[in-house]
Every structure is written in structure tokens, then in C-alpha cells.
Image (cartoon, rainbow, N blue to C red; front, side, top):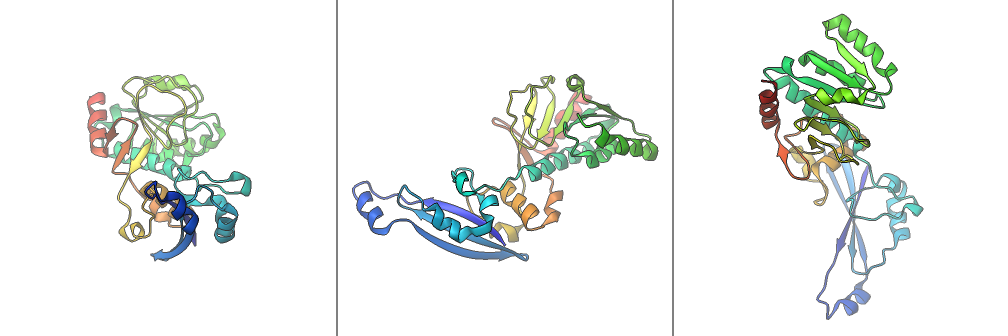
Length: 276
């Protein structure tokens, strides 16, 4: 069973706020919803007073307090063991899925230089897919041992040569980069380089860096999703906590940064024009 928390701020006319808030106080209700075998326990707090009784909520939420599905606008009391569910892994999958889909659709893909930026060596299973479609593939990783065997297998089976390095300067001549994990260090990139990553970088980077994604959630799951949660975040919870692993193959229909967006088709057009 999944557990989600929603906090609704109830606003009254200022003339009556003190009287009504004291009269009614905060109230808690629970809704049980299900779809495709997944059960969601949706706890809804109607907030009329500033103070939230987190100990009362803790008695209702129970063991799921440390991976609670909720909006990032809710400030959880970490001292009581409350933690928001982290969707980083699923976001990394989306960046990889969209990148691979784009490369597979490019007509002049052999002229495109591609790099997988993976310092911790967590995504070696994906490099074979990129090597299959792209002639110039580089892996930037501080854990070369995690890639050595898979790169050797790719060379034996397909003849494709994947370059492996820890030198970040290799990215300077790269057209298209996937960085599944959040980028936390400055990188030398071209101004027209395209980067798909799982989280907004913690540093300012040149190039076109996209870190948020959109897709159409399966309708049955959309019916149980709390309205304030994004499709990405709720799908991540379904994938990770409810074992809905088919969601891990979703290809986003669009990617975003703070000021612009791209669809797979528009990204393909941009990259083909660069390679051409």
C-alpha cells in the first residue's frame, strides 16, 4: 500500500478567521483508492490553524513516514523521522530513455558525438544501446572498472568502440550528453551542446540542459494520483514502491528547463542540423 499526504490550506475571510479556526481546528481524513492492483492511502489534512499535530499524523501514517509521498512544498519534521519519497532514480531513467529514443531516430546519427556522464558508474547497462545507434560514444566515469567488461563485450559482439575516460574535458567536443544523476560540478561544454539529466544541476552550465520531463500517465493510475503531484513524481512512487516496473520504460513526450522545452522530434531536428 502506498501512503500519500496532502495538506489543504483552508482560508477564511479575515474577519472570521480567528473565530472559525478556533471553532473547527485542523481536520484529517483518509481516502482509499486503487488502480491496477495498487492501493493508495491518501491522508488529507485540512489546515485551519498554523500548528500541525505531527505526532497525530505520525500515528496515522506509521512506517511509511520515512518515504512519504507528498508535495515538496510540505516541510516535514525530520526530527520525527519524516522523509519525502525521493524520485531521483526514476528521473534518471527518464533522461536515459529519452536520450536513447532520440538517438535511435536520428538519420545521420553516425555524425553525432555522444557521451554518457556517469561519475559513479551506475548506468553501465545502458551504454550498449547508445553504442548500437551512435558511431562516436564516450563514457566519462570515475569508476572505469564498472564499465570495462561491458565495453569489451560491446566491442566483441558489435565491433563498436566505446571510449572510456575520467577526463571531463572530453565533453567539450560532444554534441549530446546524458547525465542521469544530478550534475554537481562545473563542466566545460559547448554552447550548443544538449544535456539531458535527472535533476536541475547545482552549478551553472553552458549548453542546453534539460532536467524535467512530461509524459501521459496511464489513465488508471491518473485517477488515483493526488492532484498536486506531478506525473513524474507519482509514477516514480508507483515504479519504486508499488513495483510497477513497466513504467520504467516510459519515453517522455517533452523535456524542460527553466526557460524552454523540447519534444523528441524537435530535439532530433536540432541535433540533425548540428551534425549536418
